[in-house]
Image 1 (cartoon, helix red, strand yellow):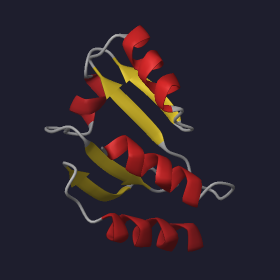
Image 2 (image 1 turned 135 degrees about the horizontal axis):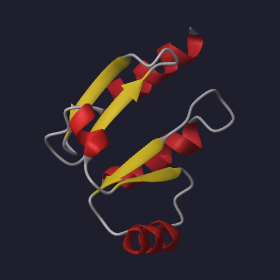
Image 3 (image 1 turned 180 degrees about the vertical axis):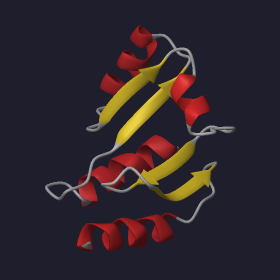
Image 4 (image 1 turned 30 degrees about the vertical axis):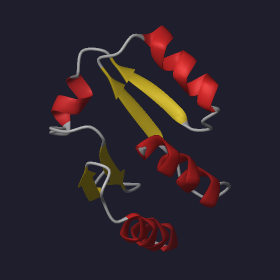
Length: 98
């Protein structure tokens, strides 16, 4: 469910100084690649086969959405699918104005 929302964000902010990086944890590269191609997602999906990136960011639930600004500072975090997408959109728009 989160991937659909990420694609919507990608489409909404396309051509602006905005990038989505989805990090898949502990799944096989072939399985992830097949899924991304089948769904035709247009954002980058990286593999975290050992869970190191998830551990670094303190991920305790999937999905976890993290908005990082140009300086590498976490500006917004949501765990689970039931977050406030409008709040995320507002935060992205605010950061793009900076």
